[in-house]
Image (cartoon, rainbow, N blue to C red; front, side, top):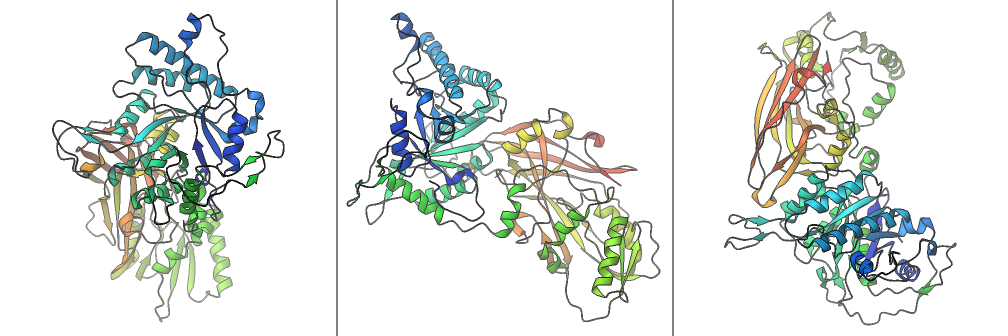
Length: 613
């Protein structure tokens, strides 16, 4: 059963599984686990003693020694309640040819059997230390013709320091670091970033540094396997987790990662009774009911406690759920006429307007200039409805073309995009500032764009799925969720209004990002962009993470992808170049990386993505 009810949360993290040993009675194993409160089992599908070469040499039967026939459970039970665990002994990169061949045959046989059972996922054993080339080749071959998810098991273990250094709580200033993330990165690169390849993290009693751990939130982590020896004991003798483990598990809950309990009972809790009996798997199951008290129930109860302790999702986050990691093309309000639904969505964002509006106590005369003829109809209706006929004059025109009958004290606009200037606010306001009196003010008075390198495997795979260059040279508006932010943001371009210097709106900036040393190596899939605007004086509005205006949803960050993921060795600096270019009919961005390795210049001459003037 789910860990609890959290309003607005429909993610997979509500379900908790249990890792089991090989059992030749799958119905009994499943009933025992499900009636004990777990939602699924991670179980071997084949007898671990099976070796193809031994069977062939002995002239034995060629039937695979599986844990159960596919007929003992119905297809929905296999699919919903069983995750396959591939035999842990396989070693496809062994120097022993017989072991290597046995491993490859067994891997393919077990995956084929899991597919036959309609399982949604199988967990692959962790690669042995050293080369994993042949293992990855075989997995990649399987992925090409299989829709099932494969989760590579990777231990989330503390990095080791060798060459005579000591490991003193993440003091990684010397020696060579051995990092389990490196193993994962090598494997997924060999498998071409395949979208069906995920990670099952083994959570042990010792955790790496925080910066090292947070890298994984940009990776396709599907399950976190928490071992019972990771649990501490509270004053009443029950299992509990350290503060750092609790924070990590909470992070997994918020990123749709399922928890799996593994290991044996290590806490003897007095008074526990196994007399309770719960029904079998479902109403259609022929399996008899079994005692419901599972020996690992105390660990499940603690995980459920952590889940139930989560705050309910705020209304804003519930609204944004469907937009998480969903790539959208930025709006082009200057070139296109927006639809009424778009205006309605933005107008629900009361925070934005409360920041911009203030009661002046003075009589106002307002010229409302709107180029969208459809929106003009709406504005006339609104003015009449509110009784503003004496104060507001509607002008149906492009602000760059209209000739105002008088000069204004204040020029108010809402032309900001996710990157500040990406909806052509500079071009529009430069053309409209002639309306202002010499001492007139513009709201906003200035805005700055910001960038930050991110690991975003899902976004990269979504862009890659289009199989063309243009999508890798396009900027996307996206509600970032499954991302790892690798370094603090840096400012890129700043625009101020009114602007009388006539220096133009083209820009160039070189940025150097320093990734904290204790993060270890990382991979960059692109750059997240934000903005921060000064409306007037000390009133600001923005989405830059460190100065974020709370509870505002009009702007999601922008994402600039890289054509090839950028590997960043530990201690390296990322050097990125950004340009804002313009022509007679369009404005566009170009970007590239020159350190630690060099990328092509993306979107040269605006060939793939531009904003129309």
